[in-house]
Figure (cartoon, rainbow, N blue to C red):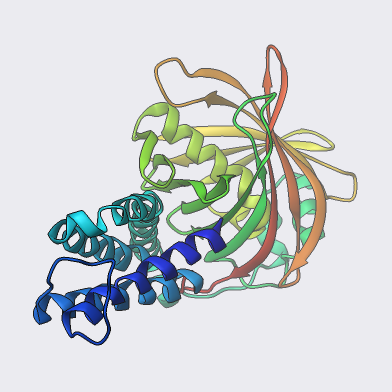
Length: 366
C-alpha cells in the first residue's frame, strides 16, 4: 500500500507540470484547452514540487510529510477548479491522497503531543544524585523479595532514576479477536512514580491505531485514536483509570527492580514464594501479589483491576506472566510477558509484549 500511495503522489505531482508547460508555451498541451497565465503556471510548478517533496519525506517516514501533502492537495484542487472542464478528474486523485494524508497529519500531531509529555517527564532527572544499591538496602524486605533483587543483579548497580524502553508484540481487543502487531516506546520516572507509554497498532495496511497511556502526579490518562484521528477512548483522572495506571507501574517494576526499594512501595510476605506489594500514590494505594521461583525469578504479578475505564467497568483479576528472561545493562528481567484478564467467561490473554531495547538513567527520548 505504501508503494501504491507513493506512485499516486509521483504521477499526480508530475501531471501538474502540464499547467506550467501550458502557461509558458513550452509545448502544446492538447489536454488543457483553457488558457493559463504565467503566474498561475508557476503555481502549477509549485504544486509539482510540493507533491514530490511530500513523496521524499513519505518514503523517509518523516511525520511532517502529511503537512506538505495537505498543502499540496489543497493547492492542486484550487488549480483544478480554475480549469475544471479539463482537469476535473484530478479531484479523484486529491481525494485519495487526502484519505491518507489526514490520518498522517493525525499521527504527526499525536507524536508531537507524546514528545512534549515525554520531555516534561524527563526533566531534572539528570541532576539527581546517583547512588548504588547496597546489600543492606534489602534488609527490611521479605526474604523472597531479597532473593528476587539479588537474582536480577541489581545489587551493586546504580539505582534506576529513569528508564526508556522499546517494545514490539501483538494485541487483540476481544477474546476471539485477531492478533494485531504493535510497537511501543515507554519512559519511566521512578522518583515521581510516572510513566508515558505510546504505541502504534497495525489494524490493517495503511491504517493504524495510536494509543497513549500515562501516569503523572498519581493521575492516569488513556487515549486511543482509530486511524490516528478518531478518539475512541479518552479517559483520565478518575478512580478506575488512576488505579489502573498505578497498578501498571507497580507490575512493571520487574523491569526496573531498584524501584522496589522506593519508600512509596511497601512489601508483605505471604509465603515462601510470594509477597504483596503496595504502592502509595496520589492519596490512594494499590496492591498486587508477586510470585517467584525458589531461585528468585519472577513468575507472575496479579491484582484486582478495573476492566475498562467507563461507567460499566468491572473489577476483574489482572495477571502478568513472565515468559522469557534477558539481561539489559546487567539486570535480568522478564523481557517477554503475557498479559491476561481472568474473566468469568474464561481467561482473556490480550497483550504479548516483548522488550527489544531498555536503558537506564538516560534523559533523552529515542
